[in-house]
Amino acid sequence: MQRRPLLAGNWKMYTTLTEAKALAEAIVAASSDVSDRDVMIAPPYTALAQVSDVLRGSSVLLASQNICWEEKGAFTGEISPVMLKELSGSLAIIGHSERRHVFGESNVLINRRVHGALRFGIIPVFCVGETLDQREDGKTMAVLEEQVNEGLRDVVLAGPEQLVLAYEPVWAIGTGKTATVDQAQEAHVFLRKTLAGLYEKNIASQMRILYGGSVNPDNVDALMAQDDIDGVLVGGA
Ligand code: PEP
Image 1 (spheres, helix red, strand yellow):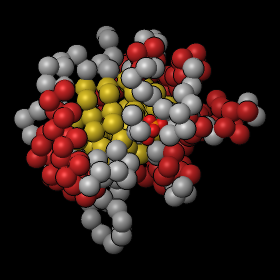
Image 2 (image 1 turned 60 degrees about the horizontal axis):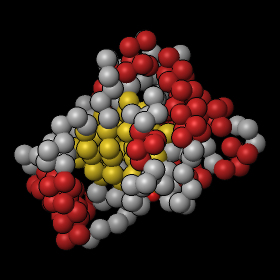
Image 3 (image 1 turned 135 degrees about the vertical axis):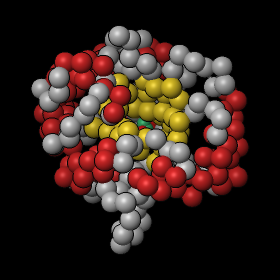
């Protein structure tokens, strides 16, 4: 079975409400005749409701940039899966490198978020990736393995569509430095092998693994032509 490509946009802390609405409208228009791939956008929280209105009736998927594990409660600064679902959001970015490295989110916390999302039927777009120091020290695969094993600890999946994995080398995010296609493909093959250690064959072979890190119109086709790259997670571009 062919894995269906996913093109995902992470808007980070960009766009006012007016800008978000205009960008969402442009994306809906640009993807109106796209039927061979999924398109997902993750606007800032303040724009989720309005963007949700814009996406109604289109095939563009709505995601949040993070997600809490609880339905509601005293969790200042968080968004719950129920709140996202109310807006027809179906995916949530979890473990993004900016959450890990700027806000200090640990593998344990990220694992709670993955569990929480799945409990409410939200698809985690679960991000992993090594820093430049870790790559230069030859620790890339060990770091990826640990992030996957810890982030997916005790996570039971009924099928490959329940989770999307994203390989995002930290040194390539927002830096203009993209991993070479060989570096990206090598990491993706390794990630698929790591998944095979956790899940049955069908899940490991059919789960989508996205590449993220300075993807732009000039490099996207070469990256997506790689056997194990099933889409991209795009920030700046
Ligand atoms: C991201 O935010 O996930 C990302 C990959 O950003 P950029 O495309 O700007 O590197």
